[in-house]
Image (cartoon, rainbow, N blue to C red; front, side):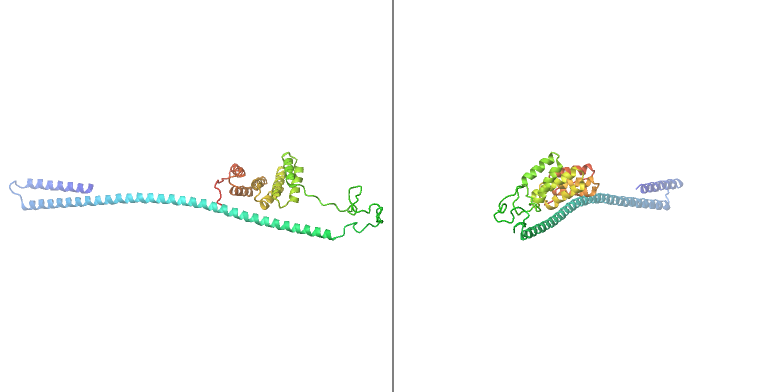
Length: 324
């Protein structure tokens, strides 16, 4: 637009000069034909410049309109791209969270299957042990008892049917009955279950670990299939943990988790197993146990203790509970 305006001004100046000099060179009463033609050509040129100016102005308006439309479309595209990127980021975050949840659920299922396998293996071993004990008892009953067929005369009155000591119900001075022999010890009687557990807990809380250990071992020995045996295994692990025998403690905690996963002490057993692994510088395994505990028992005090431990170690935890 600036160039066309400048061109128009120049043409006007040239026309004015031509008219001025032409009129000065000729008399006022005589205007030559050439001057008239020149003026006509100049006027035509001015008209052409005017039309060109109008055309340029119209085209510049169209270009400016197109440029504005392009700028608006670019702004809209940029906004759409930004919104799409935000949506993609949100979907990625959601997918990552779902993937983490699915991974946690899969790990929980795998752990549950491992627990079931371990428990089945332990039950099979217990059944085999019971069968072995039953066979031993049957074999012992099939063997003749010492003294049942009479004595060889080593004791006074053994050869006489009416002599002293010949009665089957008479007792010897030491309290044993004739014919029992002195080389066979009587079978140990199982202690009362609940009383033994309560005594073991009292001794453990009082710091009498050795006494408590014997009482808990009696429970595990005489009541291996009872859920109380899982509680006894937990306390055996606690005793070992207090004595910094972490490997033995972990073995007892595993006995609880594998054989008594529904026991009330299972969550505490897994928590302390994680602590024991960390104490043994097995940080990765310890973190795995604590994370697994949080997934299995998210609302328990043990889960809160696990989160606090992981946070103190600088490990990020999640409070999302696994789907059931």
